[in-house]
Picture (cartoon, rainbow, N blue to C red):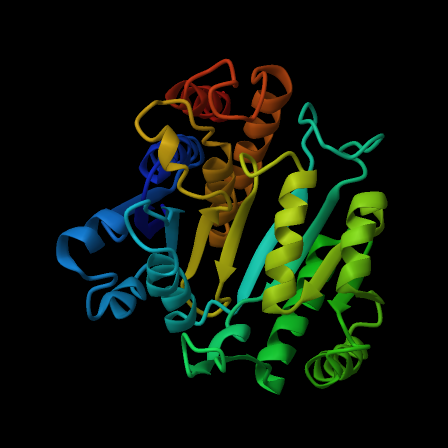
Length: 353
């Protein structure tokens, strides 16, 4: 029997609540499909920071490298200044573990409402491959004369040939494995950001020569946003840089039904990957047992697929589809018709059959 060592970081706010339901579903899948999950829990987050002044302890990233995957709840605490935890945990782990791909499926499940008029599940089914360790988020830049009338702030977008190429190559491979429309769209801004996206565009076309079975397209980021709203059915797989990927994946979450169903993976194909719900820690709902755990459950489903437990992953996805189409009244907190724990029980029950 395969056994997988998983690091669990429940995080802040409602993070521990949704992760508990995700773990419930994962354990049901493991029992049904004959594999083991050895989970170790870590208290990284706002409470630890307020208690110790420490965001991540020394050696944390090295310790996490021993696991097959990381299952993350949510980071963000109302008593901690924005940016401290996000940079100190999320970005720090992405960089230290070289999780250079952010993978975001945008899928509308049957029974889930979308704000797009006359669009259904057959229209909204694509994936965004976002470069995850370079670009504007690399942290290059600085401030001069802070707080004065002459203040200067510089934030630089760092794009290396190695970083761009490995992201694009991953996207081509993913598009081939996905085997749907077999169309890869590069999202950029070549008409203005000529240096950075000149590199992206050249690399895209060079790598494309190795994938003659994949159709290639290009769209400016503003046009991508427009078409995601007007004609989302045009997209199969989109590849883009860190900043643009951050923006369009939140738009993607909205058209697939909201943050309550959106999940993502921070992927290192050769190392440790981390899976998380896209929504924040929602501290105002903490402890009320009303938050929707579906995004965390979907993140667990992505983790199972990444681990190679494809049959179990499909069972979890089918269970989620069944629950949102037949049972839940809404994906909004407090309006589901079920409590947080009841949703977890429902999905786990469907997985067990």
